[in-house]
Length: 543
Image (cartoon, rainbow, N blue to C red; front, side, top):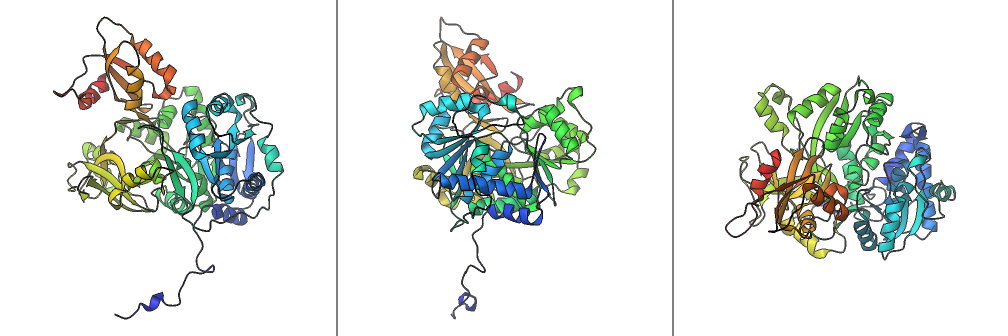
């Protein structure tokens, strides 16, 4: 067999091969559209040339403080300009960006600071109390930079440091020569799972995966040139599904939103002609349940990318009437956010309502940047029949699957067993190739887009002196998507009220993890004593 002529003398060189990275997308946007508005935050307007210069200033300031390849820069920030700047500045230094979830409690934050070995912490003063508590628990002692949001001065707590964010940037070089990663497989960011089984796992993203997500996001969500994107999705969640980087592809405008509140959303959508936003069902509920005085008439169509469980048909109809075009996405922290989308066919518009609703409830097909998506038997690693009935595990393969779990080779090997990423989600494969979730193998409750472990909540309930048996399942909720519902058997001769047990949980858990409902019953079990959660899920619907 003769040697392949296309492999002779046609090697990679700097002229024809550069590592993929999203950092250069900001440089291009600033060069092509320097005066176009990149960021809107309150009364503040930032052009692309200013955005790029500020990111370079921050990168320069971080390098001058010893940050470089292999280091971790942690940020505790809301959806503000500083968060967007950090998404470019930190990887410009070769370091890794670690975004903290602002809803977490102090022990979990302390664990992440230690596990990530955080060298610098940029912290919004809104969270000073929580971060002060977290830092007291952590072994890591990062250099702290305080971010004071001049647009929302009332949100600021006390300073944690004598280093102010704007002063730090003022000392940075706006012409800083940033670092292209020598290898596109280098880490760009670190995102922690919700710790549903033990401590959270650190999910590592690569420059390559993040760059490919940028192109996939713009295609999947129908973004043309200069979209206006409202930040209702937390940027700390999967790096905002990579949209902080994606908008630079099309020189879009980021409309920052410190708090997801109805009036602020309606005002931003109307005043800035927002074209796109993303979020969980809680964002829909906030919009639809707004008071009359908070509402504004939306006269243009707004693309809404929603994840978690599909909302009820009634909610989708109301969103459509309000001016929103919905696209259902599904993914995990380990897949950079969305890895599937429910690609809608125009022919389905004419289907009877039950058939149409059935198609809307599916998670869909693979994202443009994903190479393979299927449902398999996790033991035999064979694909389940495409009959819409046989349940298996949803699995992914491609460049938008994480590098692995930081400092956890066992969990990484388990997740990638058989050459596929095992999602842990159970679903079916339909004849047309669309997947649909049916259950979660670890009984995860998704509330407002955040994962809650039923086991974690049960452990807290079991510590109450009156609780003999308990089980926690998801209760459907129009606002949050799902909320924890606990079924409890009390010990003989003891008593406890619903209010008492909810308060008990709220004292020991992040508040969003606490049950909203406690039901006192004889918890149904199998003959071997295993709790029958499938029965409890049915009961929870009417609880």
